[in-house]
Image 1 (cartoon, rainbow, N blue to C red):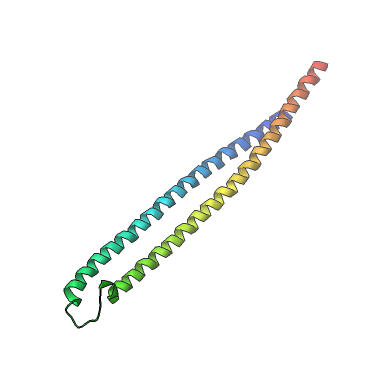
Image 2: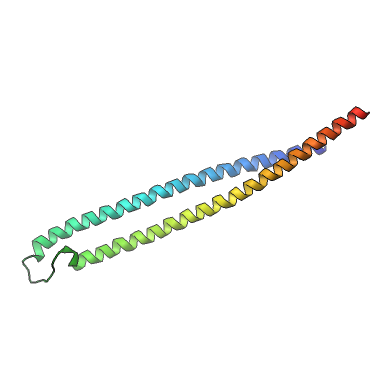
Length: 144
């Protein structure tokens, strides 16, 4: 009976270990997704800057060059500076969210890895007890 209980306990640990490995894999995939989204966000920022520069250069060359405004180039146009500020703020906020998400994933992976190590040590212990019990039962039956 003791062998059956030890074996049952061992199988429950095997099941939990497999579940943890699956969760770790899913979280690592999420980290990869987060890295891709971070890259996409950087591309978005670059594209927005390029579009804004092109638009403001056109506006500057058609509106401000021969006017009474004292702007030397398109970067001094108020709309340009406001839009650059918006892009920077949006980018920083999104990056903060991404960083928090990646940190959370990393913390969860670390926690699960520790639990996995504990389970592996418990499994080793139960395997040792199971082997010892089987050996003792075998030795007992030989003595009869």
